[in-house]
Length: 257
Image (cartoon, rainbow, N blue to C red; front, side, top):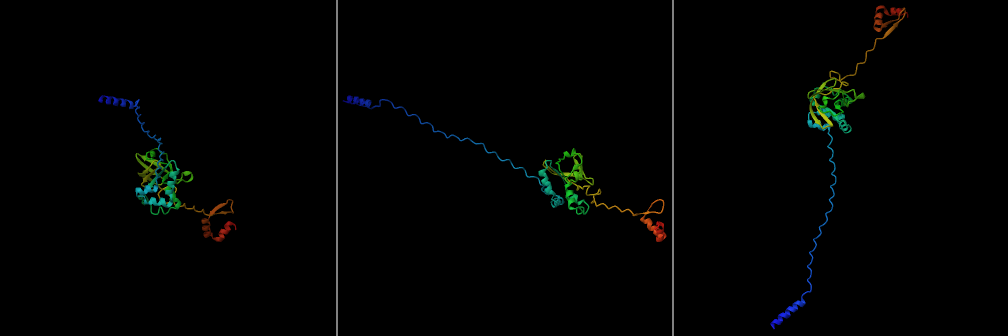
């Protein structure tokens, strides 16, 4: 009996077993990675703003010792002209700055004796419409024209000489030495000088204010005298002496009146 039970059990298992093996499940595909979006190039960064334009007043105020010059530049508005010319002129500007000691060395009343126009010309006489480095003074051609101008720009010239590293500026009235470089940027050069540059068109050779020329003296009145073969010339003083010597009646008779 036991043997039959075993046989029947085996037959049952054979009948109930699947006829074919089920294929193994295929592995799940890997998850798709997100496609990266194309990286756009960074936008062009804006160009850095140009450096602020140099101001002649700020340069002098920072250096110190130019109180009189700063005051004159403001009152005459020449500082505004210089700053404007820096924007307009491609050749740059060279400015000779006289310090307070240089102005104190002027004769008393020199500045007050100048008209407003002459004060402007005096300051513009310190401005050369060309950038000059210290080394360029060695080869620059004289005379240097200044912003004081005049007819053809030639009435207010400067002459420059060098001796080694020493630079001297001559005006026809006086001479000054460049004592220090206050500022230079390739377009504006500011040099300290030990004297005020006095233009010959305004000042006389001894540095005093050029007064108006004295009107010429009138010539003495000459009188024509007739009654002889020649016409003589008698000056007024001679006539007076003649009147005193011979009297009015004698003069009348002499002249045949």
